[in-house]
Length: 371
Image 1 (cartoon, rainbow, N blue to C red):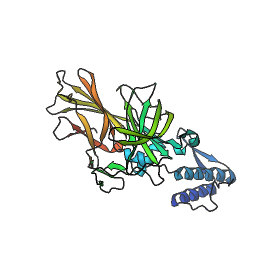
Image 2: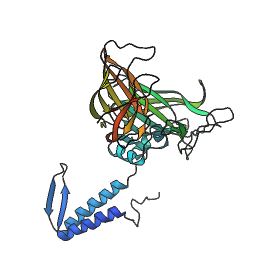
Image 3: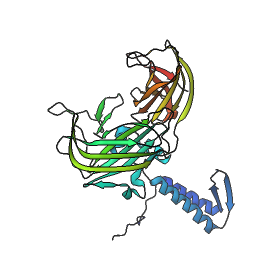
Image 4: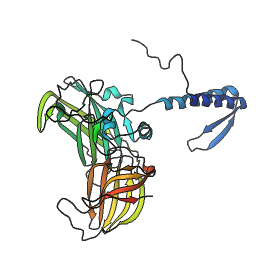
């Protein structure tokens, strides 16, 4: 069995690491070393040079190793909820996102049936929404057919869920909400007029993407355990399923329990609507906006008179008009209502200046400052 080298024989240090190392040796020369306690209290210690050298160099080395870890959400997850590299690193480091291939027991988490291996890849969670991706290997879809499962179930004994899911097709919305391929190129169509999808990655694998969210507006997904079950793999054509691989792949997953949401008191009335935006709870992947409404608010066919979040305006003036992607809307009593929505991309909450709310169908969204 070939032994793997933990560290290469020659290590090229980055400029930042070199600066830290030089700083450490300067501290050795002065026989001073700063230690940060868990409570961020600064404690100055005086000791012999050899002890200080070990402590300081270990601190620099540990920081360098941590900095070297690069978290990658994977093709399907980043297609489902787009994020910059910086956002991927931040949400993962903050334990809002979990990347399963980084786990020590990752191989044990894979489920194999009938020659097909399915494994959890990335999970991103806040109070209301959970985005989950799974890698599928060992199945080659034939021709230009659409791959799919006969059934996919997501449930939890802790919370009632709504869910939507599909095998990632390589298509994402651009900044205007127009579908494009993930490299930004325009969508192509086959001779039959259907969109040509890019299901397989460079390794010939598929990814299944799940978006689950709370059915009860009072529930939370943080820290909850969910069960995911895939059954029978094949191809789809409109509403027809053709089975090509019998199998059942089951997973029990404990979701992250770290809250990323921030609360904003708004208390602003929407002109001409007799509706006040009272407050909002906003995370990088979803939001909940609460309203007070007139007691005599009337429903009109499928519309129940509650404004819906469509997008946001950032502090630098950037408009993201097509941010909202799935969720629910409803009343908590006769005069209080809410809209819960997920996003199609990650947003830095601190950079949001305004919400774009659709008050009446057919009209342009109005902007409401939140800070």
